[in-house]
Image (tube, rainbow, N blue to C red):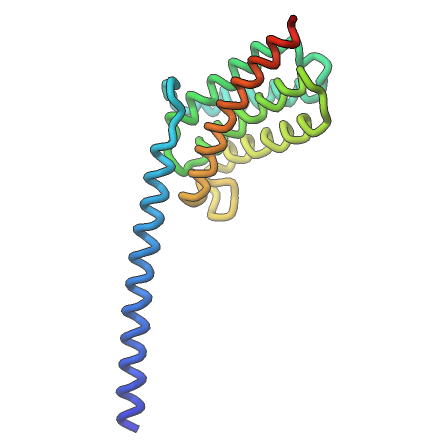
Length: 183
């Protein structure tokens, strides 16, 4: 009986030590992911703190444009301003944060509405609606628990930062597309 008790105690200590080492490894991995997310910044953008009231006004304006998509070509400059403002917000937002998620979603919604103006498709409208919902939820419920629209994990921050950089590239393509459509 003593031998089995000693064996059980040894196994318990070994499992505890293994869990301790695994926890340290996971913590250092998450710290590394958070550092990567922080370093993924768009070149040439000056960060500004997110203005929640202005963000909600922008979301409301884009929801109005969703209701009348035929007027989108008349609002390209407004959408460019919304995207530039959201880019500045994303640059200044901590990683991960509800501010980052909201800024990126607003920027992507503006991009989808710009795309709708030059190449109409219900897919652009549906994606814009989804991004506006994400932005609204992130602003209104930013402090929500894990799994909700709150700040989330470090991997969510990397995804948001990459989405922001991808949207920056997409905006460059849209500029060319809009120029071609004007000619």
